[in-house]
Image 1 (cartoon, rainbow, N blue to C red):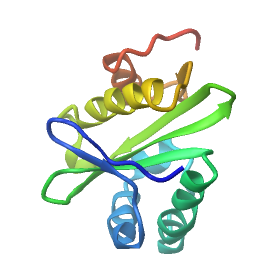
Image 2 (image 1 turned 180 degrees about the vertical axis):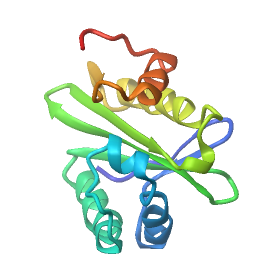
Image 3 (image 1 turned 90 degrees about the vertical axis):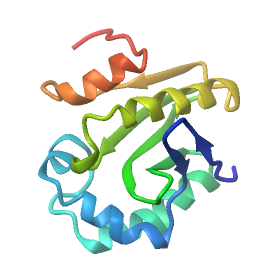
Length: 152
């Protein structure tokens, strides 16, 4: 599938590429992103380069993962959000937010837009979110975006 760009009232959601490697690398130095996500820790520049130049384009190309960078209109990276296909008609959403952009509702806004896209344009039947126990910030985003907790 070709990458798509979505817009919300405050954000541009688009694929990332080599031009975004430095911003991804800088954001992922945050200990909370390394603690609560599946990115490598320590997060090296080569990890960011592999993500922006290989992993993201490959996910779009083989339809296994749709990854969006969340950007302010001025171009600042707010965070990342991806939908990984885990079975036929079922995707799993994951996200992180750069420390300086937390508390503004950006990730919730993006999650709602991507969920709408996944259900309508991608014909996904179920979109799941999961997180480690204790990740209260991620849980709050998921709840505000309309996800229902099924178990812990």
